[in-house]
Image (tube, rainbow, N blue to C red):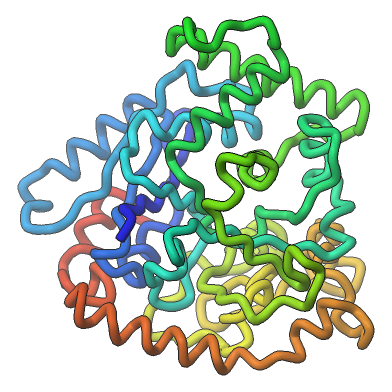
Length: 382
């Protein structure tokens, strides 16, 4: 099996002290030890030192610790939302696993994660929504139009993890630098020069999109996975799981889903939820068929579907919810896609879990080590 690292991160908040949300707890409850390790990119040097010291403490002995990575200052833009994105392009500096599974720290798993959820038949799985509404979404469209002069094939920041081959990151950086600085000699470039040029290139791109397309952010996952899709070198190393239609335009077969993004509840709906769902809280069957998990959150006791404020709900970014398309339209591709049953996915997952018990010995870190959650919680308390 390919080595996988689930990678999350946090930066400077509350006067410089980092705040790391609950994704780590979900990882310990839903990811078997043999499927992948957990790595955390930390921006603040003092916070990195604090967390490292606590994990090295004798109370951690006998338990698995996460890999902590201090985010080099040169990989930070120091300008808010763009900074949240740039560090991901340099995570290969600290992570040597073949496959990198990016997680937001407020993303939650909803069932046991299997290796087949990440890599299948030697190909990294890329999930994306390709409704007309998603393909017209400015945040997705702008970066693809700017870098390739083409239309997007899907929106990829739709659930987590967003998974890429580690070795592709260097090629992405080279592509972006060459796009903005075509006369640079990449072969003779120092690491610091690469960091400086890539960061400048991203800011050039953001400034151009703001001026031409009135888009002030960029979607790093659209950049990463459109690079893979348009690349002759990388395209066939990914399994493209698009919904509601596949790459040939036919209605896709049901695609597994295994996570939600708490952003849909906590940030806009002012949910009282503070934690991810526990492993003893079953997810509704429909939620396990991508992209039905898009727009879902956990309110502390049950799964909820975010509703647009204009429709009487609390979620303020109605555009973000409407990229799914109109499922109530019987003729829409998304309606036809959801006419399929998730039953086959549930059976498939049951077989994969059975295999994991035999090969891995435990279906989660928490099953293997009853003390591990409390030990990690001593580092990242709620």
